[in-house]
Amino acid sequence: MKFPISLLAIALASLMAAPLQAKDKPKNVILLVVDGMGPVYTSAYRYFADDPATKQVESTVIDELVVGTASTYPDADRGVITDSAAAATALSSGIKSYNGAIGVDRNHKPVQTMLEMAKAKGKRTGIAVTSQIVHATPAAFIAHNDSRKNYNAIADAYFDERIDGKFKADVMLGGGWDYFIRPDRNLVEEFTTEGYQYIDDMAQLGQLQQDQPVLGLFAKVGLPWALDMQGQPRLKALTQAAVSQLENRKGYFLLVEASQVDWAGHANDIAAAMAEMADFVDTLEWLKEYVESRKDTLLVVTADHSTGGLSMGAGNEYLWRPDMIKSLEASPDSLALLAMEQAPGQRAELIASALGLSPSQAQSAAIAQAEDSQALSAAIKLMIDEATHTGWTTHGHSGVDVPVLATGVGAEQFAGFQDNTDIAKKLINMINR
Image (tube, rainbow, N blue to C red; front, side):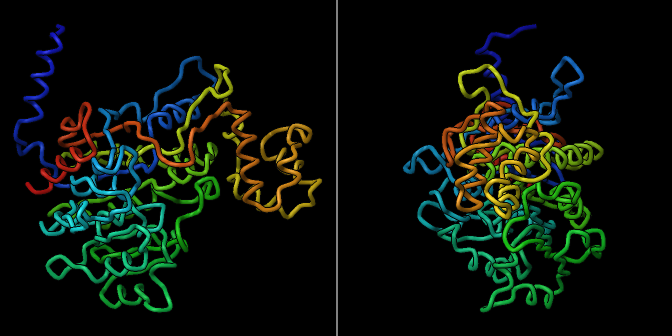
C-alpha cells in the first residue's frame, strides 16, 4: 500500500521523535568513520569489485547496509566545506565547530565526547585507525585542542587527561611513533608504567593479554598504503583485536577509522583509493557478521566528508575502466620511488610493466623528465586516470552529503537524511541510557 508523501513524512517524524525503548539501546557501540568517502567512492568500489565473468553488477556489503545520508558542513559561520577535525568534533559530540577544532566548540571551549561519556558510564573504550592515532578523527574523540596540528600536545593529552582518574581509551591502535617517542617525552614508557601493554608489530596483535589496556603503534606516522601492505593484516586485524580486548559485561565504545581513503583523495590517486576502500570493505564484512550474530551491539558507518571531487567517466566518454588498477601490486608512490632508481630511459619500461602497458604507451615527457619521486608519482596517477577515465575536481574536500550505513540494535534510528550532529546525538542518547 502506498501512502501520500505527507502522511509518510509525518509517520517517519513521529518515529524519529519517539523515545528509545530498551530494545533500541545497545550495550556496545561501534562507529566506523571512512575518512573522505563520498558517494562516488562507494559506487566506484562496486564497479571496481565487480566480477567480470557475470553480466550483472554485484552489490557490495556497503549496498546492503546503507540506510541514509548525512550533511557535513562545519559551524554555520565557516562555510559549507568541512575539514576532518570539525567533522570529527561534530560526530564525537553533536556540536559543530570551526575547521581545525579538536573536541572544542566555536569558542574554543571543550565539549564532552561520546567516548568520554562511555568511559564515565564504566564502559571500555578504544580506537583503531590506519592514520596516526593523534590524527584529526581519533583525536576529536579523546582530546581537546584548538588546533589539529598540535600532534604532540594531543598525544600528551591521551596520557594526562583522565575520566575519574582513569585513562580515556583502553585500546589505542594505529600509527604514531613520532608523537609518542620524542626527545622531550616518552609516552610509551609512561603508558607501560601505568599498566598498558605496548606492541609495535602487527604480528603481535594475536599475543595480547586480555583485560589489560593496549597501546599499539605500528608506524612513524600513518600506516603504509593498503596497496603496499597486500597480504598483510591491516584495519580488519586492528578492529578484531580491539573488539576482543574491549568485550566485557558493561559494554564498550569503539571508534574505527579507515583513515586513508581521504589521503588517496587528496593525492587524486584512484589506485590507492580503491585499495583503501577494499581494506574498509574487508573490515566491514567482518563487523557486519560480528554485529548481526549478537543482540547487544550497534554498528554505524559514515564518512566525515568527501575528498578530491572524484568522478567516473572523465574525458567526455561514457566509460569507467578500473581494470588497470585491479592488478597493481604497489602504490603509485612506491612505484615512483622504485622507478627513480632506474635510468631515465628505463623508467617507462618499469612503469609499463606495473601498469600492464607496452613501453611505448608508458612513454611521456612527464615520466622521462621527472626530477623526483613526487613528480613521477603524479605522472603515473595521471596516466592511470586517463586509462580508467577517472576525474577529480580538487585536491581538497567537497561539500557533498555522505553515506550512512547501520546494522544491529537501534540501526533503524539512522534511516533517511540527517546531519552529522544528528548521528552523534542518537549515539550519545544510546550510550547515556
